Image 1 (tube, rainbow, N blue to C red):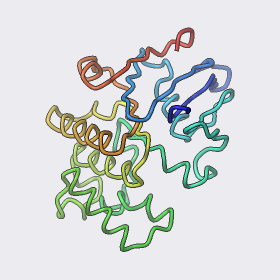
Image 2: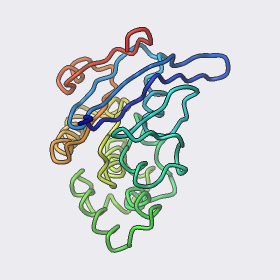
Image 3: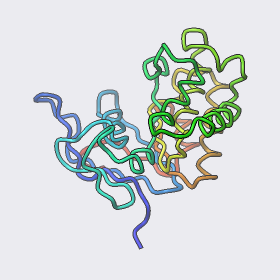
Length: 222
């Protein structure tokens, strides 16, 4: 039996004439945490975007549990694209400033035409999980701290109960207590859902503590 996994197979990505990733292969098994490290500019974030089905590689492909995915973004069927979620470094770059935190969390559910009663129930559940009090949920991004906004982005990432969660420097902008809280929520979610997690971070202590397996992004060896 094939091990359930998120796989980038022989992926190459170019921006113009610049090759960012050159035939890189990376797998994330269900239930494991993979740490991805490498110097700035080596393509870690690009690889995360490819795995998150947000960027089409120039060569190679992504597969989810042995199912090849050839499209990106909303061209990917809902049942596939909702199985992978990503949590970015900057919550302010990722969040729509016009939305309240409640609507920010709810937006992916509404995009898949989830009944509104289910949306409200799921949003309340996740807001409680990440520690967003009712008064914070009505605020827009400019009215909350980076830590509070990243908690909302984490709730948004978990809203479809993804099988794979990609964390791209997701705790880099947080204070130590919020960083620990976010990491604990992700670890608890992983155990409950047997989810695969990718952790990209320059924090070697966090990497050593969190990852089951660490991969150095070197196209010659990955």
